[in-house]
Image (tube, rainbow, N blue to C red; front, side, top):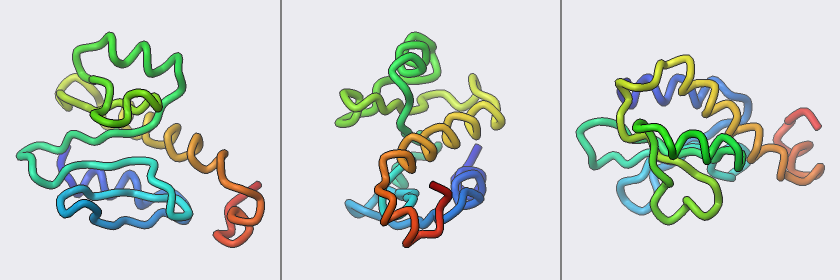
Length: 117
């Protein structure tokens, strides 16, 4: 998986924007709230994303994920080995992250961004 694959997965989700923050971190956002991020300063992409508590525990027990630096306390994980995760599985995790972040948006914000309530 490369940055273009990750961009394709994330940008296919409604009302998603991308922006480079902190000089080297590509962030994917729904209504300006980050649901996926990846450092641009590493040779292979290591995306991070939000999960549920149950999924977080499962993923960090695998050899493919670690608690995301600075965000693990909020149940974010970071992919460490893309060879251990299929594109479909990664796409499902990113979709779940998007839905978790979207669910926290107010009705007003959802309406402004034309997102389903």
